[in-house]
Image 1: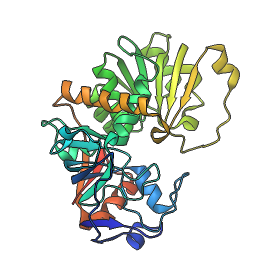
Image 2: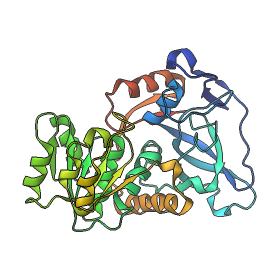
Image 3: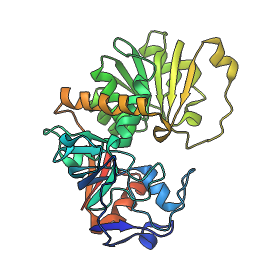
Length: 329
């Protein structure tokens, strides 16, 4: 099969190679997917660059963890109905697995693939995986959001946009923080009712205005350390914060008394550390949204061929993308 790989971490142009590799076979409990699209997440790029806080020490790595395609082989003890099904997948190059989705085929645990409705393209399916499942867990882990006001920081990012879309679909009133008017408009396409430009507006003051001083019931944070100066001032009493990243400060000093005084719960998490029940809730929750909202925007930032995977990784690193970059075999 055709695939891209690296034997050491570093700059994309220096370490990524495209060529032929043996086609994998589905082991017991696994399915093999003929891939039609591979999603490139920021975490994939950081792993390849050697910048991730968690690393993988393998002699050869096929990058990218998300993708979509058709199940063309099943291993022993796998539901036979999966054979021939369109699917989207997550955690391809995670959890001790070296070979991800930047290839023509991938063999992986059957619990990592989920049916892809016919109305959703393979490229759109490749944008789901880690971003949409992270968003689902962040929005719903602490219960239903119908009738509640929630705040999504970084509402125009890959995870943030899906958090907006899922929360709005579930009946929440969604406010976002963004860094530009362009990103504000993009977040509104997902269902945001208001956008706060954190570069020129006081986030706490604007949230107070938008909620009549009540604050938000839930906050989805893209950068816990960066959001921390205003975070305890915008969450309502007995509210919660779901934080899936803190790139600006991995060891932030938490003002404990401010959180305690309002009974605010902090939920930091990483998707590949969640248990089976939580992962299933997220992937099947995303599937329910796909089926209920077949025409909802699932943003593909740009497509690249597998041969041009270096350019795909470089485009993610440039910070110019809006949505998920997709590589096609």
